[in-house]
Image 1 (cartoon, rainbow, N blue to C red):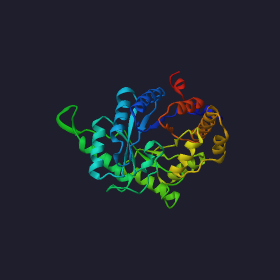
Image 2: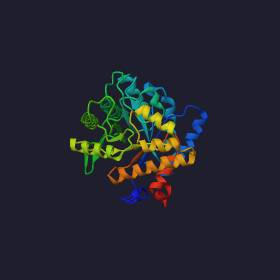
Image 3: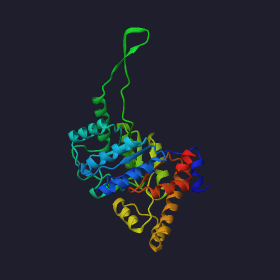
Image 4: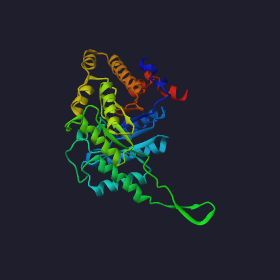
Amino acid sequence: MTATDAGDCAGRPPISFELFPPRTDAAAIALGRTIDRLAEVDPAFISVTFGAGGSSRGRSLTVLRYILEHTDVEPMAHLTCVGSSHAEANRLVREFLDAGITSFLALRGDPPEAADGTPDADPDAGLGDLGSAAELVQLIHRVQQEREPFGELGVPGAPRARRIASRPRPERVAVAAFPTGHPRSRSLSQDVDTLLAKEVAGATLAITQLFWHADDYLGFVARARAAGVTIPILPGLMPVTTPARLARLTELTGVEPPADLAIALEVEPDPEARAEIGEVFAAELCGEVLRGGAPGLHLYTYNRHETVLSVLDRLGLGASARHG
């Protein structure tokens, strides 16, 4: 089966995207157009990164509100422990909930240079009094419970009887997973144990850091399932179409790319041909993980819609497949 057959395996798998806050007014206008185009494929959610220590909080919230008000897509807010106390994180969660944002990606924290939308690295440095993503997951649920305590409902046929109503929960509370190993982890089994702890804390979804080989993802999922992890584990993938971008991702994540991809991008002088090389590689990798049982695809967009939508078209998962 080829990559283009992936969408026919068992219906269209859920697609989601990641964006980062724009730095200029011109970039904000362009990002609005990108969001509109991404919404055409009816993604399950679009996540928006959040700078370490809240450095891009206002711009993040603006993007999240645009998604909420101008599309039918669920917006997902990133939250990190870096630079945040319990009190600050509590206030931020309330601010997002008050704005109508009910899905979160809880991260221990990104290095400052990763706030531009590259995959999350979850480092130890710069933590406030929130020591882990699991603690942040618990805080998100606690804030929601405090905002909307249990209510009471009448019981049909018993006028004086009352019953406790179910309490609303956040739509999604996602966390990071590391199929090639966290940079500070002692072993891959520790990464699995950490993910299990996040699920126990209340996480409902995991999204992986960038990887380049399907076996890395599939092997990690198999180990996680054997250890008792039951939440969906979405593969996080970024189509890369320039050698400079590939080098930058390698620097940020520490995950070495395949030599054949790096060489192909380096020796090809034509930008269109380079784009095709990166898109074909990404489509083949997406197809492999989907055929291996991935519950969907989470695509890091670098705030551009053209490449990720081309990859989905190559997979037969684009807007025409969704609406046609």
